[in-house]
Length: 221
Image (cartoon, rainbow, N blue to C red; front, side, top):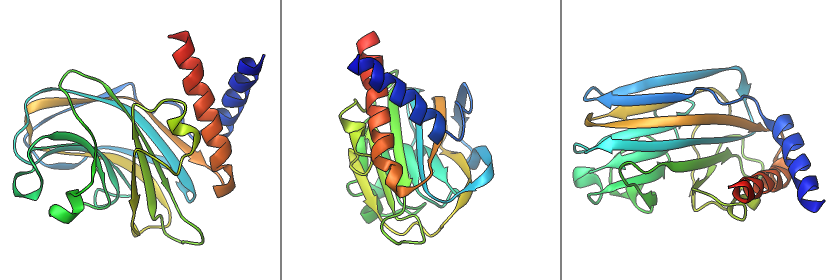
């Protein structure tokens, strides 16, 4: 009975918070050309409060130096979450799922940016919560999760990795993907979801709803 109540709460809250169903069944990105707008998703109205995004990411092949496939908010210079590989002089070699505040190179922007090492042919479920703290007019916080379970999503302000920085925009209506140097690899994006959290006070309820949903999925599996 309790599990059924949680499931019903989850469905109700998810329906009320959702601004969109899954946006696309899949994107496959490849090629050497730097494409800041490899995919662009425009909303009918602007986001002004918290926004949740989640998607599955996987890849095949090997990466060239400074290869990227990332989701961005507002524009391709804004906050990002996705995959980076072999960044040359800008970060340690390796392929990682990561977040960063802006499209800026340099060690300080990659320091502590890794959520989890990435593995070829393995699907990663990435969550990100972009929001404003206190009375901030601009978005200045982003929490991120890798393959989160129900406990991890019970508090949306405490991700596996958290950014604190003024991202430079107070509202946005566009989310997209940036890719570069993918001549030796293909990055696949599946089941992209974008959900608005209408008010800051709704964060705890949304976290409970997501936690209930994750628990229900885990039980079924």
